[in-house]
Length: 106
Image (cartoon, rainbow, N blue to C red; front, side):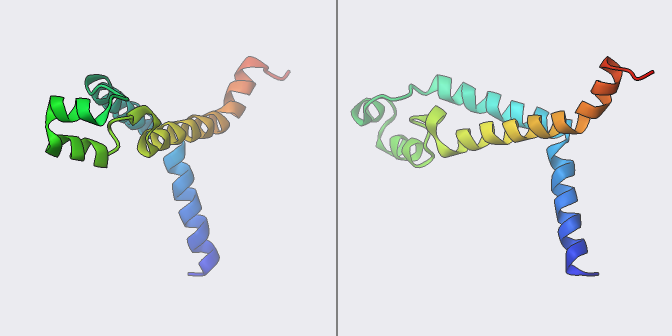
């Protein structure tokens, strides 16, 4: 096997993953779960408020996992970005077929 085939195989497996509707559903479920967490934990309060409400140990865990400003955290932005790339890839993959249905040639 040549190195070019390995790269092509890797890129095609990434493309297959990105055009998967299953990935879309999984990302939406993860985003829903993280949004519930972000709704249940007050966002943007002062450290003293968190310590008084949850205790110092839980506050440190919430801070370490970036759950105190979750909607601006790196992992929430990553999930939104992955969903955007997934939707764009699905659209690119399915666009030619939809174009033929909407604008049939004679």
